[in-house]
Image 1 (cartoon, rainbow, N blue to C red):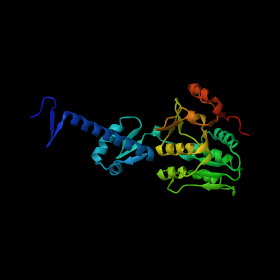
Image 2: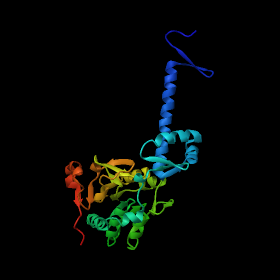
Image 3: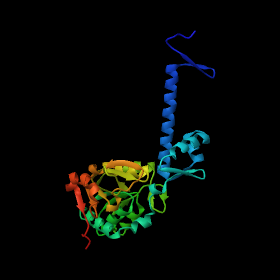
Length: 286
């Protein structure tokens, strides 16, 4: 007999109390949520993924992945194309060489302003990106630098000076950006300490959130910031208000922010409280 105080539900050959049924439903819902978060994270990491590869990595059926993908693609960030789930175009980064050719004078000014803060004999972390490369180009005359980077462009820019020591991680080179990402890179940076961390970002939101196109890039940036005595964010004005999907850190946490010029009035409220940490490089190119 089922008592009046505890109703029972029959499911197949199992009998559940209402409380057990609710707990089971909650557990299944959390499992589904975590799986969808994992799918989003994998696509952010790789830019795209097939339904088959997601099913294999998450150890579920392709039908389950397809249902998850249908829900995830209802938003703006992801879309489905021929059995693949991809980042929408507005959330994809432009090719590295194209970024290098964008605002070259502004990036040169940023690079030279950053270089003036970095003396000979310094140990530096460098992140990936075209603006950190501008800093490396401006440091070509420095000597006895120890450069720890996953950015092959930076490593090559500073390799002509034979007194420099350049340390790069093992791993697969990501093309065409010529950088190295992955969990091994995070562990690599965790083994070192530096005086300066030089890094850029894909975008800065109105609340100061720092954005990247891949979660791996965001994790590496946070690691080198944490392991350096001083953090240098090098960012041109166009990155303010630019959207990217991976969130990590806030501009208020950065020691020095070097930009070519101030962004529009929408960012005045954000930047005024940290005015003493801003370096405006516009017009400093000689």
